[in-house]
Structure formats: structure tokens, C-alpha cells
Image 1 (spheres, helix red, strand yellow):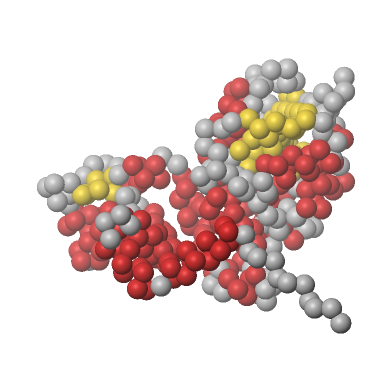
Image 2 (cartoon, helix red, strand yellow):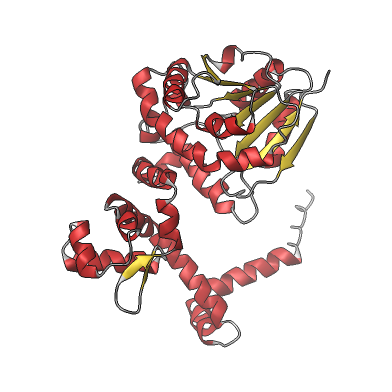
Length: 377
């Protein structure tokens, strides 16, 4: 009987990583590194990063309190004392102080030398973008679904709140009443990135642009001034398209943007030479994504282009956004997953598109853009 094969030695890089991990895990080493001049800064930075991971939920709730109490809008009027802010916030002075010091520590507001508080850059950014406040309020559903993350990962949870909020995630028809809440949130999130997407696209030669999964039309509303005289079509589920038509009519675009209701599983309207999917693909699993890309290819005119715009996994400098945030958000939603640009390019190629190229955006953390072309004349 032959001897079992000898275990292969681990590569030097793996042995070094194992040794490093043992050192970092040692309380004795941690204390030494925190005091040694050459490692002190790294050790203290790691301690702060680890604490921030543990305390992140509290930070998010501080932001929620600021938004619900309208702190940023109040301070947009000008710096104020704690006493004056306590009155405006409807809080006892000591509780107002707790909130203000917490918000200051997170760089949402700043303390002035005379003891008054004023907006900092992050707080000012919230006042200028209502979509941020809407998303923060929306996260109450996500927090509830993540109360037991292991149960969510193991599939032991009941129907999640997010899957109820986004009814299309479960497939089937969406009633008009179900479309209202998520339609408004989609609008605010699309408005945050619409200009970035349009700016990244080459609009020359486009005669007819169709936005698939367009929600209540926020993206096409932003695109309309850049596409004068061109046909614009919004396609979404019937209940959503009906709401889009009403909203676009109220903002004076009812005659410019045609709103069509339907289901991409049964095909898309044909003839557009540009189709956009703005924050659509990451909401769906691979099979529906493949079906939607095939439908887009079939619907496009020869030589047309497909614009895919969404936050993507593996975005340099924004890995926690694509991989952590959207990974768990979509898990709670019950449908979809974040994909890398390479994955999306491969899926587009499988659907028949010949070439896919990324177009740079101002804020890739929020949205990256891929443009895929259909060959033909």
C-alpha cells in the first residue's frame, strides 16, 4: 500500500499572511504596536477603523435623527446656539447638545469659536440633494431586514420588508397602489445620477431614446434638454408607466415623452436606436438579466446602442458600496446582485452585442456607464 502523497508546502505569501494575522490578533502585539513610534499611526488607524465598523449603525442613526428633526435645513439659515437650536428642534437643551456633538463628530456640522453651530460640507450636501434624505428614511426597512444577517444569508427569514417594498422583485404584476412608494424613491435616486450618465454618453446620431425600467421618468426628464427634437420613450410596468405619464405631464413633458406599459419578458417596443437601463440590472438575478439584454438587443435598431448605468461591484475606491452595501441590500430585497463591469460586458456579449466600452462618469461610486453596440446597418 503506497504512502499518501505529501502535503504541498504553502506558498511563502500564504505563510507570511498567516504569521501576520497571528501577530495582529495578539493583544500583546496590539499594545506594543500602539506604542512603538514606527507602527503607532497604523495601529491607531486600525483601531479607529474597527471601532467605526462596530459603531456604524449608531452613526447612521445620528444622521437619521438630524434629517427627521430638519437640523440641516435649520442651520442652512445660519449659525445658531445650542439654546436656540434646542427650541427649533423641540428637544431639551441637554438632548440637543448630545445630538449636536454627535453630528459634529461625524463632520455633518461644525462648532464655531463663539459656541454656535453651523453646517459642514456633508450636512450642506444633504440639504442640496433630497434623494439622500429619502434614502436614509428608506433604510429603516433595510435595518429591520438586517436584524439577523445570518438568518438572511441562510434563507431562514420570512418575507422581508424590502421585498414587499419592491414588489417587482418577486415577479408578477404590480398594482397601482404598490407602485407609488417605490416609484417616488426611484425618482429621487435617478435624479442624483442622471446628469452624470447623460454627460458620459455620446448623444450624436441618436433619433429615438427609450429608457427601460424608467420609473416615474426622472432620468428622461433630465435627458430631455440634451436631446432636443428626438423621440423619447419610457417603458415600465403598466402601473408605473401610468404614474410616469401623469408626473411628466405635470412638469410639462407629457407631449415629449411617450410612456408605454408592458413586461420585458414578453418583449420591448422596437425601433429605438438607444436604450438605457438605469439602475435596473442589479435588481435582477442572472436569468432575468439575460432575458432583458436579449430583449434590448432585439428591440434596438441596427447599429443602436445600449446604455447600462448603475453602481458596480469592484469599483476602485468604492468596494464597500458595490460589494457590501448593495450586496446585502439586494439580498434583503430578494432579487439581484451587484456585478462587475466585466460581468456585465460578458452578459451583453452573450445577448449579441458586439462591443462594450465603459464611459467615465464624475462619480463612479454612484454610477458607472457601459455602452454596448448592436452591429448592422
